[in-house]
Length: 345
Image (tube, rainbow, N blue to C red; front, side):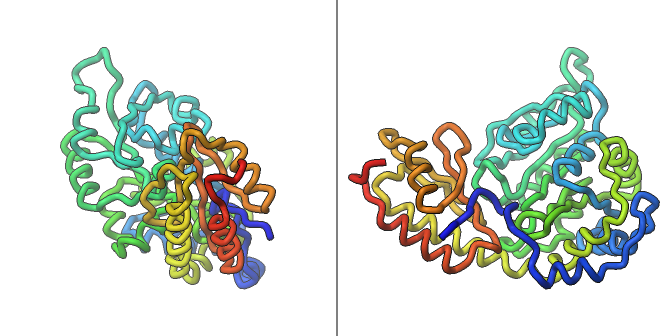
């Protein structure tokens, strides 16, 4: 049996999703004439209580577009040192927008208003870059799927308003966070100037992210999307998948979370495991004891058909998702349970 827990991006469309895609009415979205794309954008904007939304090929492009519309070359973006926009977007913040990142060491990817306030450069001190944007990530990827406390985000919003800073959310896995907190999407829409929302992770779509914000922000984003090469034609087939997922797949996220917690519980019993990050959503990050060989452990698990990744610095990551079946889950838990400290890795 093969078990792929490399990421929640490995999912494939369900038959029902494919049927929705095949049946989608389409047009040329570059001319804003694709009815399925227009319907998705309107639905997501309304869901978050924002004026407008724009469909993109990827979450990296939505994040990079948001950075571009909120900053000028030479400005500085404040974010956690684990942030996806810093680690996993190819240096796009500097390449596309000419900005630097002020990195804060938060709690598993979550930063506080107090930390942000200390990082803001004085606007009249011309020796330092202008602080113009704060970017948060919820849930946090390298932080092990940690969820922000919305009360802390409210404090951050007040701080940003006081210092005239824009506030962006990398919400690639915000759907997972909302499943845990049961908060309204509109509550998040009211706090952020722009939000990036991904459909190709927990919701199981093949492609697609949406950027939501004000009419002005999305009008500017349309221009930047074109410059970045993100204009698609009959994109309604992809938007239809996102619309289907929005209606039918959100309720299934709790299953991914439960499986992740069960994996963590079994890992906790293994003598070769040193520690496990707290599990709130669908990401399990753990580390082996110093005397264990991480590479050999991963190879042994691969030989058993179980795939996951290393994040560096001793961190290993498993991500549950909607294509991870009960049979695969039972096989993984059984395989892990059979491991013991004396087994040669």
